[in-house]
Length: 435
Image (cartoon, rainbow, N blue to C red; front, side):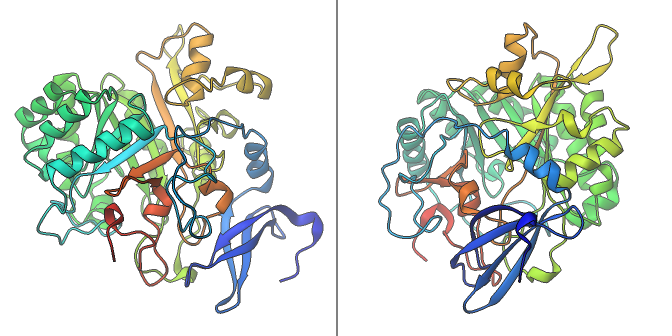
């Protein structure tokens, strides 16, 4: 397609969602204000993908990109184009600030939107292999990096507390369990065992405040009560919670504001909210994927919080590409009213506040520290713009700061790890095992 020069915003490389070829791509503004990406595959023709609702906003975030910090190690051999030989290799230009270890293929739910399989009957990885992954991460990314233990559903493993202790023994301090919450809702003693082992928090999938949403996204209305019980158990034990909302257009995008308010109302136990527009993994039809991105979430936040959080209050986290992770940090003023710490922040103040030596790479904690403000009692609001075969750009993949450990010692970006083509064929198998 012919695009007027004045409508071209950026040039990049992207994927064909069918065959995964790496192709030259143009990111452009359409006739209105929306942002799209186009590329042409010699085998599958032209592919156009929606990226953002407002071009000015898209570019304003892009201009806040910083250089970041290089990974501790970039020793993987380059055998193909990015992102087909991840390692991390010399092309990767940002360090990990959060790494994942998948400890099982199994799950005690079968959610319609999940990119994992719940049909497995075994974990697929031994404790000894997990210990090997932990050792690799301690060496390659450093134990100061946040560690998230995930799956599948990690709480189906009887030795999860032992895995947490293993991570602690190798120096990891920030250890989070990514869970659907069912087990910790049913068994507070089990949760206590994880706290005693050394977890610093739980990351609970929490998609809305009405049962019908859980019927659509998780397969059962009863799940909501279980998640509320899980949060209550965390409250009883003093265990921090981050609630993660998977946003599916047409199902729950109208509850973004409600979720944020729920977190603020329960800030004694909820430390953060992760708003995550759903991405495609598994078999999909490109033309049928709903248009909903991080940008849409940001604009919905302002509408649904009645201006408590405005579009201009949302800034890049600083630890990755500005179109990957944005957010703000909510604190109480002297009159006990919530407000975002980023309000009124200038570009110069943002750049000055970023600390490349900060282990988590989070500019908000740095901003608060430099202003003499404590993060205690505050609530982090983060919007995560995961990429799939439709939306991936190679420039963003090179700056990914959320990575996954592989059995062969590699550490690769989360988005390339979860990537599938339109037929559901993975770019990388679980743990990087042979296909």
